Picture 1: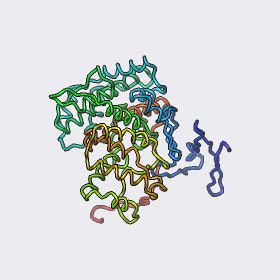
Picture 2: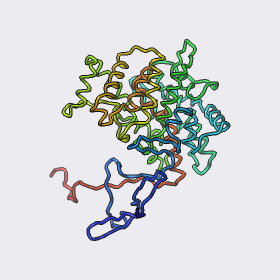
Picture 3: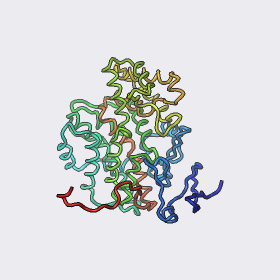
Picture 4: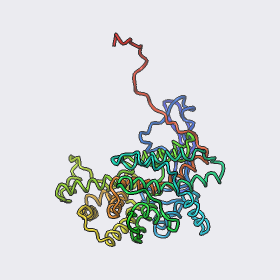
Length: 428
């Protein structure tokens, strides 16, 4: 294969270099396109065919159903690592040694106390506020209590900023849920692991000791790992483009949370449960809704099946399906919503229409089921997604700043009015 691509515009021909990744992905480097062609640009709505950066963090092959963090397969990480190990690998490039992991966890715990004035901000929100709006605001508010900007050229400054947000973010997540439920805002315990501490802060009741369910803990650990990064998706791209203006880490993360909020992105698992609720309210006939999903003229959309990137199967869904079964069996929950979900799953896995089109249940389908079984409110699902995605966002922000990437500034094709004269208000 040639190492250049040729572009023909009218009688003029232009050559642009090809860039090849370590997994043999190929891109045309068009950074000189506008200059070379005297103003011609590409247009790619949604940037589906545009690479915004070169990254060494996550490899994703949607056609083959492959997902790797720093070269490690998602299957092996979910089976053998815990969330904090995966977070370290994403952020720093390698799995930690025992000493590195212990130090990382110790430094995170020492940064897990949030300024008490943050509680006043939490109290100012009405109970009706959406948890994602609260979380985005609280994350941004951390900037006010940690005003010094991160010197990205200092490893110490960068490390301190990372352990600070890794320590404080789970507190903000827990407080967001407890605010919604009218529970007192609490802290975890330095004697617990990272994920166990998250569970304690979220679920502990003021009048009883909280006991960790190991099956639930393992499922949550896997869920956080599976959501930890996913290449240049909407929220990650938002974090990078906000950070490209040299906005700080906390501000860039807040922007990412807002992008994640949308139902086409992080809100997908919430949409799954809302769909299941609607099916229940209509009598719970799953076969009726499977028929509606296959009817091109029916506006009903089956949420949690198929994926815009994975054209074969979502490798994360295979892992979390096992965890979902374990959680439901362990907790022994009798819930009509979860029963409807299981019926939909079985019908989709055996229906030729869905099998031929590879419309398998995805990670959003199973994560919603697990979160509901754990007792997490539906409106908190996207917050849990953000909790898992935190190390990926940090890693992407860090990589972007250390690579000294230019400020993001997409072009456009203008389709508005041509120059026209101004009319005074009396003549309009």
